[in-house]
Image (cartoon, rainbow, N blue to C red):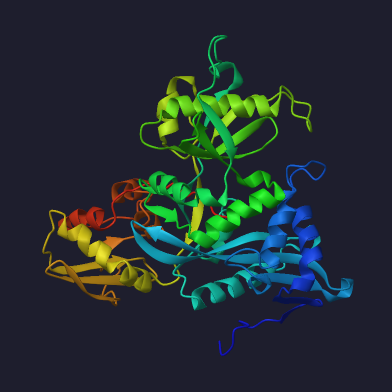
Length: 445
């Protein structure tokens, strides 16, 4: 591209035009997103969609402005918005190595305009803009299969939860009092929030990086608007010392705890019981919108979490995670970006000082890593001389599952018969370079 418009505006036929949004689209886009994405149009729970859209198109968000949003308008209907998407630029970390990640979000098309390729055209524009910013990865949360069409693989855990029924919530005895207080976060809480957040993310291979601008936006945006999707509270002892924090989402029938952490010396079990009692009491015996009784709390904290250990006997059986879609448009560039990490993994392994080649065959493309004394000396490709020319074979985009730690090489071989190696050295080297290492990604706004 010789400019920063990435081919837009663009006619899509039938008087449909794809263009970047402007601030003047704000009211129309707010109503469009609220109507299309809202699961409960008559309730209060989804009003955050309006606030979020206004923040994105209005420039309040630290990394998004109107020009990062695509809209398809129907000129035959007075320029009505019929499809839209947004690119949210973020910084993520892969085992300590930071990288740019582009998150397409709020992707939707009005029902009469579906199956015309409108989302595909927008994804092309968003991908081009994301890659021009140097973002090596794109990530989406979305419906099953759909985003595979655009080069994504369902790769990293998304969600996973345990449910705490109301009947199992530990009540205080008559002679007992709460040990903690709860209050909304404040800007001056940022240092301790960052400390707690870093502790939460430490076991995760992938994480979102929150800088001061993100913290400030999330805190002030929640305070100004009472956004139900961003209920982050500090938990304090009775003498005013911070014990931890909790982030939860208000939902009919059962609130969802999205994040909870405590400082050293504080009991996760006692804090969880306090939070559970507080949220159930705040919800009341009956949900005001649905008339249904509150049934309990959902701890949406991934496959494993200290809260699960603290409350294990009282929690229902685990609900298994869904998955993030991950896209890596240039594997060569990605490997080059994390080469020092890969070298560290080799250096600390039984393959220390390794010299040789690792040829990865993806059937339609190939990647070759050359090592000299444990260092990556070259990242390139190779031309297979035969169909079975390679050290390890990965169908489709299954290599991304290995790369991002969600599956081991043995697990991939079990699931995909055409994922294999028949050589001993690659079988030892692959788990060293790409060990299984789960992620729980706490989403940013």
